[in-house]
Image 1 (cartoon, rainbow, N blue to C red):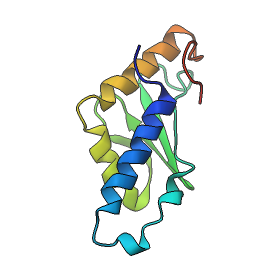
Image 2 (spheres, one colour):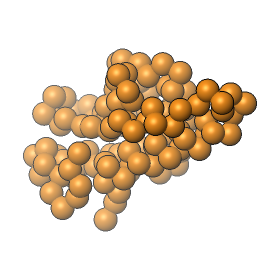
Image 3 (cartoon, rainbow, N blue to C red):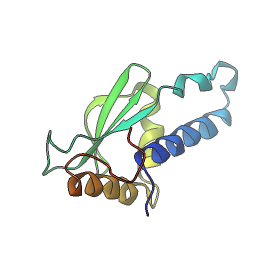
Image 4 (spheres, one colour):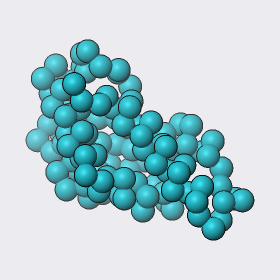
Length: 115
């Protein structure tokens, strides 16, 4: 069975913390900023165009699961790191599996962590 949306959110959080803790500006880095990071999907909203909403602090952006491109919103300086995470080899297929599972169970991710 694939990863849950919650597991993918934790993976993104770990990626963001890791990539920014190595940066030259780490004295201003606050990892607790990502405690409210959340991934969500609503298949009823637009069933023909799979997407994921990514929320970090008070910012929200929507990304296509087909292309990885941003559809709407913005994440400020974190956006470039989120795009790097989305472009990793297995990220979009794993997110697409979550979408398909929600489609199969009409929006309810039965058998996996619900976010």
